[in-house]
Length: 114
Image 1 (cartoon, rainbow, N blue to C red):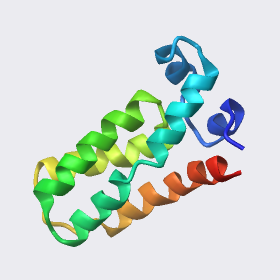
Image 2: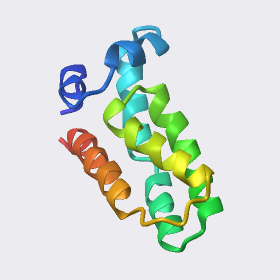
Image 3: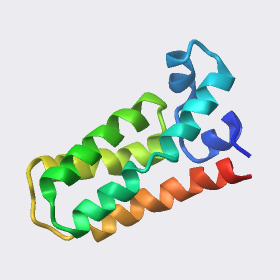
Image 4: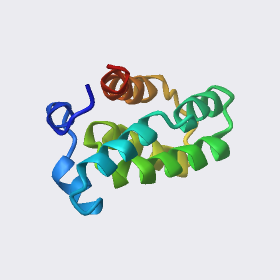
């Protein structure tokens, strides 16, 4: 179940996220749900696999903002890393970092599904 406590256990900075939402828990949790269900994650993965580094950067940068706004630190850290690598248009293997992003993403998505 998606709760403040469950998000804290995953490493989210819910205090910061809640402050951005004027401490309205219902609104904050609704934004978290919208953020993790964003299809931009899949589009990021597709762009990376297609080696479209420009599109991948745009997707990563947008997700960085969305995830950062709700302070999902466990997802934000690898998103921030991939954003900077893509900003530099590094032609590297992104498999490991995408794996970390999706591992953390699925942890939060599993709370939404409950």
